[in-house]
Amino acid sequence: MAFAFMVFPFMDIKEYLKAKYLPSRLDMRPGSARQLRTAAGQFCDWRPVPLGELCDEIVVEWLRYLIGLGRSPATVNSKRRAVLTIWRHAYRKGYVDRAPRDIPRCHEPQRIPKAWTVAEVELLVAECRKTPGMIDNIPARYYWPSLVLAVYNTGARISALRSVRCADCNLAERCLIVRHASQKQRRDRLFWLTDQTVAAIASHYNEARELVWPWPLHPDRLWKRFGQIVERSGIPDNRRHCDLFYKLRRTNLSYTAAAGGVEMAARQAGHASSRTTRTHYLDPRIAREQTAADVLPTLEIK
View 1 (cartoon, one colour):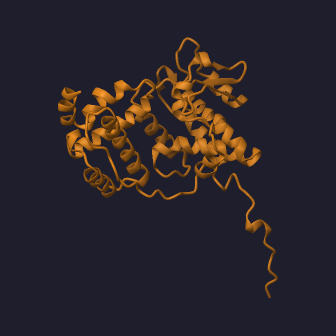
View 2 (cartoon, one colour; view 1 turned 45 degrees about the horizontal axis):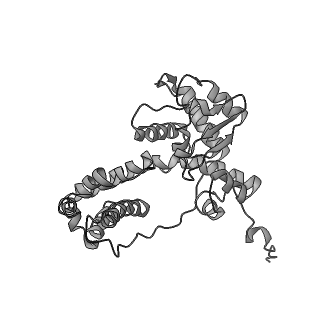
View 3 (cartoon, one colour; view 1 turned 90 degrees about the vertical axis):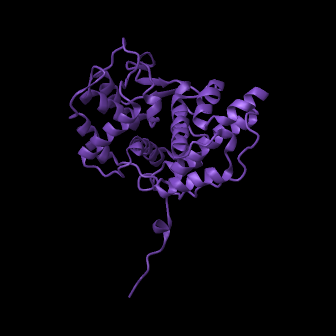
């Protein structure tokens, strides 16, 4: 341990992440590992601080730097969480003699969740059907409509759907299985499919292929390409490409809540608490609850 203590404090967090943290994890999902690598790389690009010299003041200064760049509070907090995760691991393992103590989080304003309406999703699917080109030997005009309809149909996260294997998609029985490895809940989930979604998937389904929706390009290109389709469709969006698939997920959950209640939407989302569903996913324009406007007496104004 004495030798390790001599070596590791002189590494930066990016080097420590690669050498010690990631190899120590048995169940790290690729997306989570990618987020840690991104945050560690950005921190080291800002200032290559040896692990043994990390202190609260340096990390707070970096967070202020991110805020100055115009990063959102949620983004700043996610970077903070990543750096502290690596730092705390080094402290628990005895590679550094100091742990983070008091590094504040950004206040994240609670915004109203926004989904797309059915009419907007119809415009989106219509635009998807015009998309030229090929995606891993699948015509894009078949790939994109089936993916959009699958998110709209299931409300599943895009990362989960992209991992669905052809062997786990049964079009005859109108269902697919998302395996536990791609789920936050770490459990397999079965989703039933509408006839529309089944027909869209059937247009390019090939049981000899590993994945239903393969993506041979860099993962970031998926969001960029989808953002371009959304822009061409003419439906409003906030230009944050990373949020667009989540708007489809919110559409599913908002309409589910409107028809079957919040608890049904929470089950569809796989949330342990309906509070999470209500707070972050339900668009109140769609999943409308009774309010004062519905019960107040009308004034007789003269």
